[in-house]
Image 1: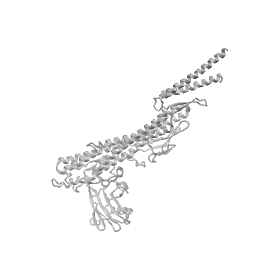
Image 2: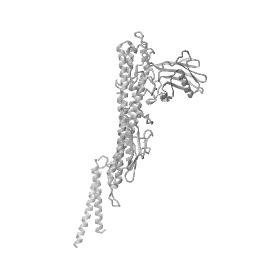
Image 3: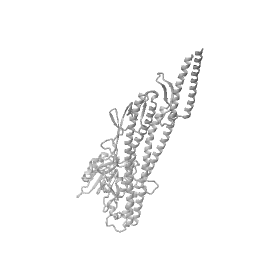
Image 4: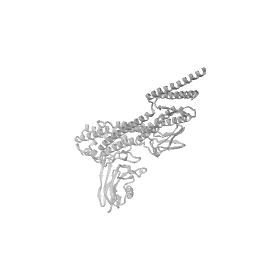
Length: 608
């Protein structure tokens, strides 16, 4: 090699070493900056544009990190709300939770058995009933406050996601316009924004050769293409109630839905079943499932306590070929239970529910919680004869063989008769009727009422199910507050010390099965009492909270593990950088010595 070649080599070596030292300097300066990815000097580009510097990261692990960030966002928001929900129910070991207050009512009624006319005992029953009703109200209101909070959080999260999509679109444009080593800081900023977006929702990331990214939902809907972002929308509702439920029919929905507008096309993400994930997905699940289920459990309990005390069981009477039942006093929402065998030998279990509002018919089988039940909604507004015709039509569609008829007596009674000829048969027939008066209707007592109407709860479906949100409206019957003696006096003429009614109430409260709903998420049982049910509710909620908290903690561990794997390649190791700095300084010094030697040689030659 001649002197000019040696000089050129040393000069290039100095330049490259200086560029490498600059990269080390950047790494040292960026070590403490969140989101900074370590740079690595590769060499000069053949085009002469400048040095080639790349970010040292594992793109596969990075995508896994974004995925786990989304899962962690989903799990953490659910655990947070579950713990808030659990707090509403009270400490399971305290004397002020729902189960304890129910027991207090039972105990107060039991004490009244020993002194039926005692004003102190009567007052204690009304106080215990009021305390229970108020706690159910408070818990139910708390659930709806959590649903309203989740609605607000979805709205804010959608706004944040839109801002991040716009930021990512701008970064894409800048990265595309500044290729090479000049866009590494922009890529760091882009990845930081992507991490924030992943926490809000699950995104599928496609990395392009020019350093830009395209984003999509898990089912392929475009979120970002180049410099063009999609737009997320959310029509928030305020102050949600128990009847504010999601529906794919926008005109019927009581809560907001999330839309995605991309390429001139708008998609309803919830109606289309698009998996959203992240905090937004977790909040939607809370609002539309977890908290709705919790409300349904409270509504079941409130309705169960009310009807255990207010409903009287009506037995059927045998007639030739079947059974007959008196429907006198049957209220809207009250039920007639029928089991029969049709002409083909198939057994049927049917529940006939009084529904005078034609707009609510036909009732779905989910109107009762029994999975083996076949529900028949029938209007009694125009008398038992018309009701009999409607029931006959419904039974024929289930399995023919039973004849339904109304009373032909003069004057007509409210009897409905169910008969069958072999091989068909009528097996059982009974009814549950709500007493609406304090006295004169038997031992059952309407202790609780619906504050919206001031009337006893009957389970009515007219104008929509009155079960929904009943926990927010349950109160001690105002009429009973004015006449506490009705707790033991069922007729207004009972003799002092008569325990017939109070004995019946204590028995009913402890033995009467409640009508469970399909929305509660609690496995159906046809013999679960209100006391059993409230314990099941508390246990179910505690289990759910534990499960979601455990899931959140586990997901945090997974996320931390993936983050650690990513950091192994992407974060700056100061010891490594100092080692590189020392080596580069030695290389720089060596190249400088070569140039010094070449200079000395030129000096000698010039002096010759």
